[in-house]
Image 1 (tube, rainbow, N blue to C red):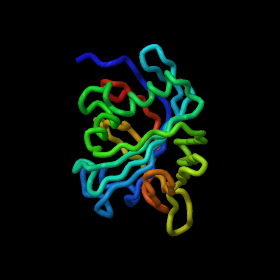
Image 2 (cartoon, one colour):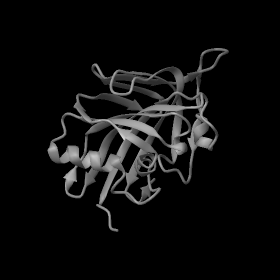
Image 3 (cartoon, rainbow, N blue to C red):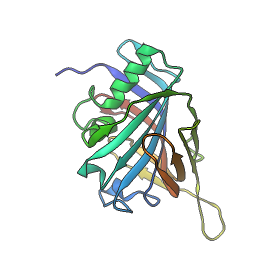
Length: 211
């Protein structure tokens, strides 16, 4: 079946509860036996059919009782309040995974693991992402706060740089690893401090990830 023509190109910031590096990236069990994450993106260039998405942000919270692929997950999506009605529906459709080929991107893959999706919220989102410096800040007042910073050497405190490369990845092709923290106050109450985070330049389409 034909899918809508869309793409989202920009930068993403993800923080989860696993140790730095996140064993899930290697198909290993999650650090603590369960998964939770805060995801966010600033769309620099994007569209869904004729609807432009440039400059908009979105965020989401996720929780799974075990490994992601084992399913029974829960999620909630937060859409930039600056988006008009057409843009809101476009972003929600993309994030639902319904207009993507099977396995093409993280939205379609994660959607197949969800048992519960809470109502989306249309909120003010403050999001800054510097991929090269491994710095990020996400704030949705009263809803969630998250941040990313460089991993530091335990010897002299200098920044420690690590990259993840996934040539066949469904979320990113290459990402900078950071130390992340978050606290959420929405339908999913999540918290982690100094755990895994990654930042990446991303280019999503309904057919896969592009460089």
